[in-house]
Image (tube, rainbow over all chains, first blue to last red; front, side):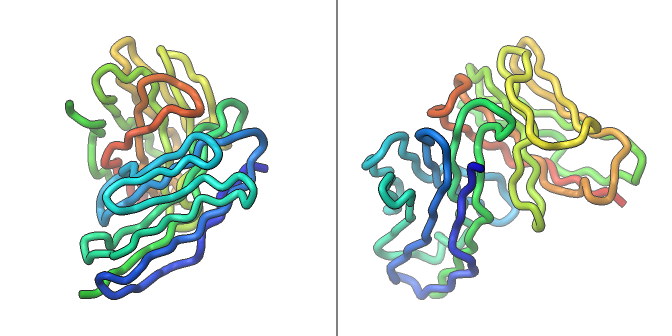
Length: 114
Length: 114
């Protein structure tokens, strides 16, 4: 079936460290891929997206490239800040069928220490 | 432009009761989707409405239902509440329905069933 697998958290980094959160997917057809972020006590915010192979999504210093050959969409940031502490969700969309719209990974909690 | 709004933000109910949650999408958005978020199961798709019609449904029992009004506002209802229905219920809206559409989330309604 269609699914998203994220690296287990929590991830703890020092400020200005490099961040990678791995995400791989299994999907029939050609999904669109997303990263959402959830700050404590809030809903989800779209961080970035990519809709076809080799597309790179970027926002607020975060980047992710849609790799069809490795079915991956890893999230990276060159220098994290304390304010980046949140839970990050990788997701895909495949329209139609009982799978519904967004299919999410389990989430990866990031804590950034000053 | 105002974001997605959900009411109420917090709710406490007892087993066997029913509950109705409300979602107002971003102005101009015609698609509304609902998701349930729990620590154990993560984020799971409930259903999607577009132009007052249910377009997609996830794997939830019939106690979970929804509807959409002509102004695109949506409600979801859960009847005969169970302890396991305690969760954060998130609503998301998008301009249209489809794989490449970005979904924008509201802050959620946190439901506690006692």
